[in-house]
Each structure stands twice: as structure tokens, then as C-alpha cells.
Image (cartoon, rainbow, N blue to C red; front, side):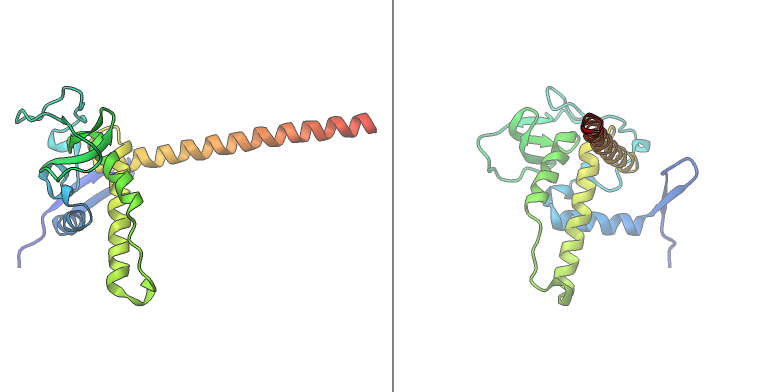
Length: 194
């Protein structure tokens, strides 16, 4: 029996996350089942800045190391799949966005959000539950990548969490301000009738 190879990633200063090759292979198999475009080596989980890719490629004029264009304009909403690309509406309109671009993951996230599998009585059907769980896992990975500052799945999770915290704080601050205004009006009315 050969030992599993491990890749080590720092998640936070105080914790370290280890992703075994077996786990990575399982995630990559799920990705290919849920969104076939993710079979590409450019989308292979886990993305890591430690592999040398420290920036998303700009689809507007960007090229891969092999010289491939990172954006190919398309016609309409539906086009056949193209290896290493995701087709959809991105920052430059409809077209093929290379998986080295953040746009490709945004497109996949939007697509996965609108195609959530539905299973009647999934609690009684093991296969349906597995399909829903896989879809959710891959949707989360695509979302994290779509908001990530760099092509790194650990950083992507941190960026998604920071965005969620920022949204929650903004909503909290808005509702607190709203409450202060309501209280000030109530106090003013009370004093005036007082």
C-alpha cells in the first residue's frame, strides 16, 4: 500500500489545512460530473498560488502561457463546449472565457445556481441526495473562485467569507440606523405630546 501524497495549505495563521491527493481527486471527479468544463487541468482542485499562478488572467487581451486567447467572442446564448473554456455572459459579453479568468467561474456559478438538481423525496433516495450534495459543493467552489482575489482555493474561501461578513455588517448598520431614526421620531412625538 502506497501512502497518499499530501499538499499542505495555510488556511489561517494558527491553523493548517491538509488536502490529501485522494480528497482532491474526489473533488475533481465531482467537478467533472457537475460541470464538465471543470475537467480541465486549469480548473483542477485545489487551485493554489503556490503553483505559480498568482493572478487571474484578464479576458480583455489576456493570453495563456500557451498563447491561447482568454476570451473568444460568441454568438448568442448557447454554444457547444470548448476545452478549457466556459461559455456565457461575462465582462466582455457573450463568449468563451478561459478557466484562467475569474469570469469563467462567475459564469459557472450563475449557471449552477439556476440548475440546482431537484429530487422528489431525496431523503429516501441515496443517489439523489449525493447529486444534490455534489452540486452544492461545486457551486460553493465556483462561487468562492468567482469572488477570489487570486486563483487559490484557500484564499477564495477567505475572500468569500470576508465578502459575506461585509454584507452582513452593512445590513446590520443599515437596520441599526433605521432603528435610530424610528426611535428619534417616536421620542420627538412623545416630547411634543408630553
